[in-house]
Length: 141
Image (cartoon, rainbow, N blue to C red):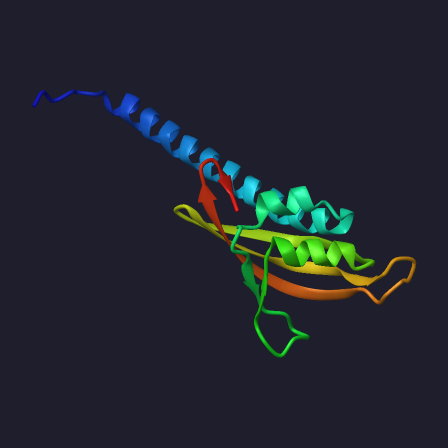
């Protein structure tokens, strides 16, 4: 095996550049995941089932809600039913934080908003949330 000699300054420059590139890549992933989490709530707010379907796995996901006594499963059909029910979902995600662990992202934040009959003004609730997103080339879902 042939050894390559690299001057120390050049090696340091290369390592710094590699570190910055990796940081930029992770920052891009963090931004993508944060945008996806916010988009999920925006799609609920607008009744965008196509948008929801692009973010929610076919098998759905489990949700733990502070006002529910049990864990429940939400899938695309649950969202379709909600949108047809005549209820209006008005949620947004705030204070979204992302931690990356390889191809897995842990997302925390605060869900602010309400679900109520169209035209009503239900009381807004504020609930913390935690999500787990998996990178599925090239997107997270």
